[in-house]
Image 1 (cartoon, rainbow, N blue to C red):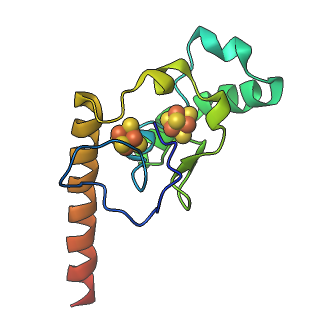
Image 2 (image 1 turned 45 degrees about the vertical axis):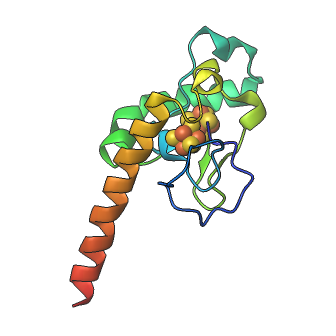
Length: 121
Ligand code: SF4
Ligand code: SF4
């Protein structure tokens, strides 16, 4: 999940098999807070506090469509990749859930592009 070290201008959808997260980050845009369970106990204290504080705002952030607080929208990378939750570690790049998430993200981008083209006419 979002270990993209590749070119961030790659399209979310690609024709071939998905083997890395370069240019994607779709799954990190569907969560507003890092999905820690008990594994939050292993985080450095300041990061635990950041995640716990963000949970208080989770529904507001989700309603606004904001990405995970650790997701860097410029680089499309996780800002604390080495500390990411187990759920993120286990999310299989190129697996069924990954492909479905990318498909949803591509649809959102398509709608946004059409809206922006419409507003320029
Ligand atoms: S949706 Fe798949 S390819 Fe995209 S960041 Fe997540 S795991 Fe990587
Ligand atoms: S913690 Fe990192 S890898 Fe997990 S959803 Fe957030 S940005 Fe993505």
